[in-house]
Image 1 (tube, rainbow, N blue to C red):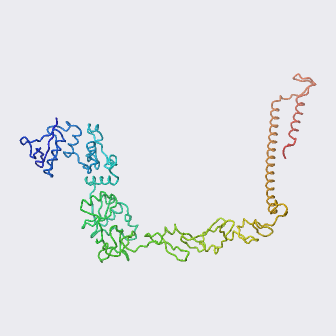
Image 2 (tube, one colour):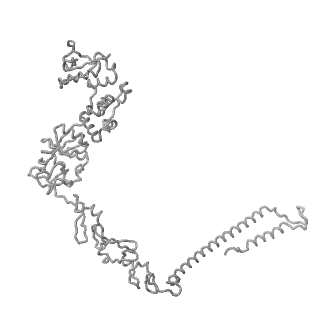
Image 3 (cartoon, helix red, strand yellow):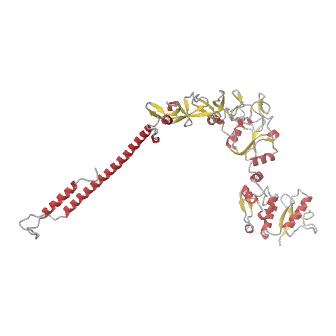
Length: 532
């Protein structure tokens, strides 16, 4: 039966068992062997109460690790350092599953964890390797949200020293980290800014620097820092990992107010980036000092100038074009506001705010927007029966009422253009059906002409069918005649007798054929009685 003992360093190269009295064994009758791993672990905890800093571990006494059950085997691997525990090893939510999983840092694949999936896998000493995030999502999503899981993964990464904290005051390196790393308003190339160089180059000292992890041309996270005061600012990218590294290095989040940055002059201005954790700057002649002056620190164009803000959207941008209002005033708007929120007045030929009232003036095949109050000056008239404004050139006034109508809605009557309400009285006042008889007569004429056209088309179609039928019959008769001629026997000269036994009185074939041919030709010549 396997026994267990507690080992303590005797020298740098040797570990020796100790007794329950914390003496190197054997020593008298003091216990230094235990029958189970759990008993040995309980004794080890008692010894740690007496010497918290002591290095103690449990080992088998006189047996091989294969001689014990698989859970004990896994516990021994944690005890002798074969398995490195994960950062969440002591958490209560994990400890509930520890004796099932024995989750540890993978000894085979860097940056991953390994655990025993089930008892059958434990018996054959097979562990499943998995990424830490996937493992935590799979088994502990009831206890951890996405942010917590990301934090534990970051702690494991820091524990494994996967990312080294880098802090630089080299201007070229700072620019490369910004351009190739996490996105922000300052992560664009130098050509996207109005300053003569990339604005983040001013962070190259004397007080500020850039902290980051990853390659300089593909950084995973970055933060502007003040190394002397151990201050870090907003983190972009992998927040969890860089924050742990900075805090492990003694940094705390704070402000850059008071820090000096490089003084780079660009014409009548200074090169200044957007500063997350600082106020406007001052110029002391040698450096720019964050938070001590009036040089803007919130611009995104790379210059420390006072920015232009669009009066409509109140955003920092550039002016585009003047916009007018109904009271005669105007102001300059940015491109987006100008294109999305103005209406062009066809009369004044200016762009007005879409908050003003506009009238749509119609024209044949076109329409125009006109500012309210200028519609008549534009040459438009209001058509009552349509409820629309139209250009006067498309309209007429009724000669009887003086009201405006679209030209297509009036009827010419003896040189006058009249609406339906002002057409003459009926020709026969005693017959109500003859109201506006001249209009009815015109409409009836058009109806009759249309009916005649339909009837003519019908007869033309019938004549075409008759001609086709006649042609078909003529072709059939000619074909029958051709076939009859081909089937008849050849004629022989008559020599006073019939060579074929016919009597002299029997008519010859030629005599019989001639009337038949004549009858066929006569039939072909009869005119068709069904068509023209």
